[in-house]
Image (tube, rainbow, N blue to C red; front, side, top):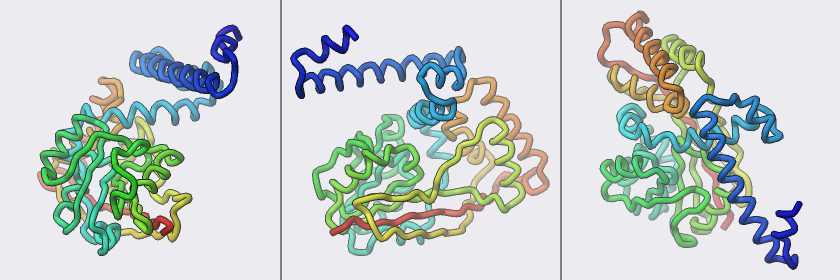
Length: 305
């Protein structure tokens, strides 16, 4: 209470500003302590949740998400090698023909950016992780690559006609990201979200997922709601196949956020199990080249003019 009284001072807006700054600093420090506890395996999510007055699920969702989102920098090259591109028909659907400028938000290593720069549009790509931006610049040198976050986009108001988010929306805070996206879009501009999802109806893909989910399960909403000020929400699914090598499939697994953040022994065991699947499954063994079936799920919404 003494600290609160000191922050309040004479009260008013200045007191609120001082409290807000102090809370932000404390929250940053709490996040650092939680990351230390988890990296050193000194506390479970159950224990961290209790300490924070939250459930285990609530604590895990809040802080493991932050750690996983930041983890990709450590595996940027594997991400570039292993992750698939996106089908042209999906990109055509996401980008209006009238668009002259597009922002790839959370662009990663440029899997979607590469497809955008082949179109007759000016492309800006925003990515917060330096290691990913290095891969991105190499993949799409003609794009305007910038450091930034979805919650604080480094663009002027009404700067682009379309914003696309590939395989990244689940890392954003929608309450902050949606107003920012609306700010940088021209009136009537389009927001497009896209995910590549492995097709589990194929037996060997279902078996691969069973191996991955023995260690952890990452549930992603690939049909998210898009709130105000967006409207006219539409959906599209595209089924397609991606050719890849055995090594690229291993890179695909290694670039998953939950795999990157695993303790070393658990990660090695998982990769061993995936290798065993490649060596033993009737549809896979002896093959150097594979075909991964995907369902690409797209969401498109329009900003009110």
